[in-house]
Image 1 (cartoon, rainbow, N blue to C red):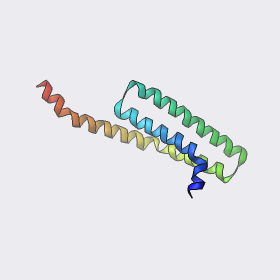
Image 2: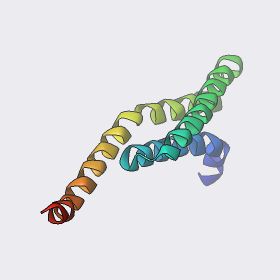
Image 3: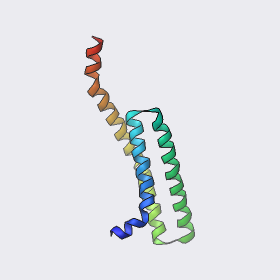
Image 4: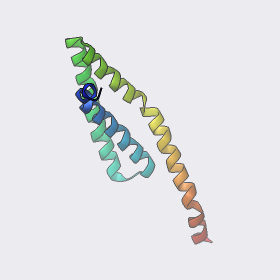
Length: 104
């Protein structure tokens, strides 16, 4: 089973890097994070289009699995965005009493 998944490691890596950088960007909102999200998004987009081209030209089960993996990562965009917003709000609420104490 592990040998079968090793064929898709770059597809998994591109998808996970995109989702992780998106989560980090939404949660912490650093200037550098926008650059990281853009770079990882373009890598993921390249992986997605290469998978589509391979799927259309080869029409094999392996190419179909690559497309399915990319679609799954694409569908995980919205839950990742929601999780990032939730974590950002929780961090803000956790630090709020300290800021209120300083201003009083």
